[in-house]
Amino acid sequence: MTQGETLEELEENMKDAYHMMVMDDVPEEYQTKEIAL
View (spheres, one colour):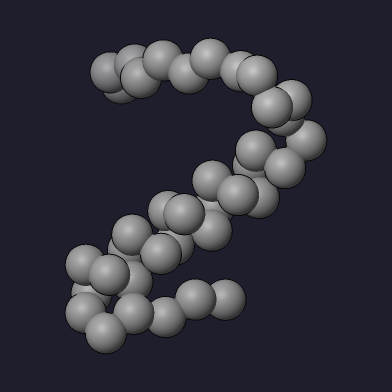
């Protein structure tokens, strides 16, 4: 659950929360790469 004062802040908070949930079991040293879909 998250909230924000603006829609943009809410969207950023949701992205951060999702990232924390997904990356919970990932080791400290990892690499990321953005790909276009």
